[in-house]
Amino acid sequence: MQWVYKNQEGSLKQAALLLSEQLKISNLAAMLCVNRGLSTSEQVFTYLNPKLDQLTHPFKILDLEKAAAFLLESQTSTVQKKIRVYTDYDVDGTTGAALLTWFFRDLKFNFDVVQPDRFKDGYGLNVSAVEQAHLDGVQILMTVDCGITNFDAADKAAELGITLIIVDHHQIDPVRGNPQAFAVIDPQRADDPSGLKQLCGCALAFYLCMGIRLLARASNFFTDLGIAEPNMKNLLDLVVIATAADMVPLIGDNRILVRHGLGILRNTTKPGLRALIQNAGIEVKAVSASNLGFALGPRINASGRMGSAQTAYRVLTTNDADEGIKLAQELEGINKTRAELQNSIWDQVREQVDRGLEKGKFSHAVVVASSNWHEGVVGIVASKVTEHFRKPAIILAIREDGLAKGSVRSFGGYNVLEALHLSKDFLKGYGGHKFAAGLSLDPSKIEDFCEH
Ligand SMILES: [Mn+2]
Image (cartoon, rainbow, N blue to C red; front, side, top):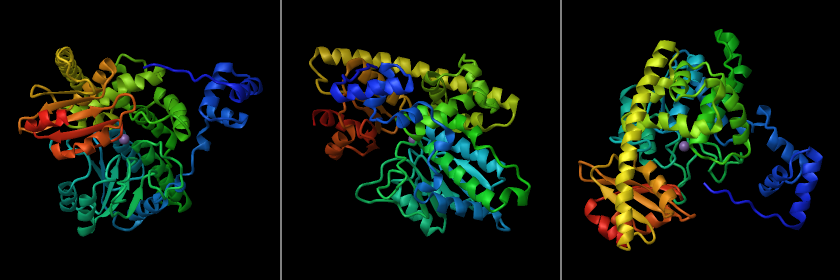
């Protein structure tokens, strides 16, 4: 990564000088704050000293109070309704699932957790997962870190009489809007007044839990049922991992969550999480922000990339010290295999690209494919390609079933989602963000797709 400092001229420089005097901070720190659009000494002070009680009130998020009330109500009637939590298989989704598990367990809710299989089910909530939920007697289905564009699945839930609660931070479909659901918690909604567009999925689940706790306290849920009120702070170890892994901007509430989450993580009592950190060769008390992205995130992600997210989920949710150690060991093995595969693919890709460049190929973007590559890790390799070759990259794994599936990563602000949209005639499917997306196509179309 390269850091480029903005050169401050005139009035901005003056503002920085004033701030550095008022708050007794260095000129550089003051200038960086000014660059971030902070101008008053109050704003800068809050920015530098984030406090938990400055977090945005959870009910500011549209539909959150409605969902919290419904969930609490569903568990206090004589027959507890069955809740299913359905999350993405990456770090954000898995930590979100773990966070809800700890919280719902404490509140003795009737719930289970399902995560899709990256290879069989793909990303998001699908119709058959909703049908399965119905067969399993699920009455309330809630998504975390996915769901906002799963219109067919939402329609199926409505048809089967399942109450759907979507908790997602991904973009709303500009044409179709929200899927039909009882509650759609997504600060990306144009009508959401919270200003929390930067939150990751796991953090949104945290706000939902804060909302449930508020209502539970107000309705004497804890005293009536003799349940100890959970300390929300203890869930921030999961939130900080997800926030770092999802690479959301560390401004506003995210700064507060990360600042405090890191401290909680260093004292975490979750046995599997402690073992996971130790296996990475890190002292729990000394976990740093960079450890989150380089050591913890990849280990948790490895689970869903290589097979099923189950192992990572169990590591993060076990109550048992011995089981925590055993599961973390298992995850360590999965991550090692992931790293080996990734290195071998990277070597092959680099060779292919070097050869292509010599022949004058890849002038705008790198596109490479092979049937030897594992689709679970091509995304990481694509990121490496963009850094190394400084071009957008598409890496495709040709699967046994004959479908080429892969990942696109942007370089230099290039909008890859738009580019895929323009080539959609060659593709079977695509989706994602401006800077990172996924696609699938018929291998025979790769050549045409490259030329397009
Ligand atoms: Mn996410």
